[in-house]
Amino acid sequence: MNPADVAAAAATPETSIFEMFWSAHIVVKAVMLGLLLASLWCWTIIFDKTRLFRKFKNEMENFEQIFWSGQSLEELYTSLSAQPNNSGAAALFVAAMREWKRS
Image 1 (cartoon, rainbow, N blue to C red):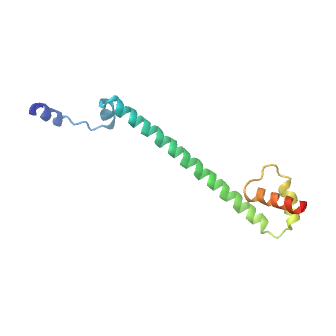
Image 2: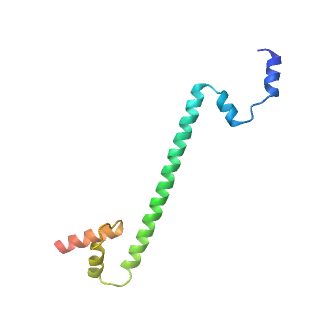
Image 3: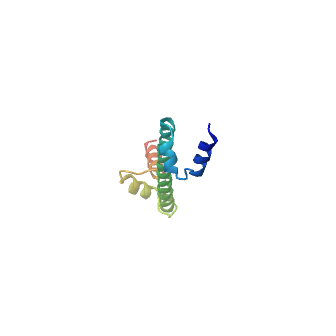
């Protein structure tokens, strides 16, 4: 390698990430794009799970508030079994009461 070429290359450093990306080899570009896509996929999963856990926590708190409100279990079962799409603890309660009534 010629020392003059090294000095010329050092005089014009690639400071932009995009410049470094465009001057990289095709394999490096493919790896970087793969890492970017994997990162986006992971963050999508993280945000989805955070939203799902927040929704589940709110549903649990609502059910606990209704459960400990003091109304009878029979009234609670009647009101919750009329709702078609119970989830979490409400669905578990309805299934348990149904089995208890069956026995």
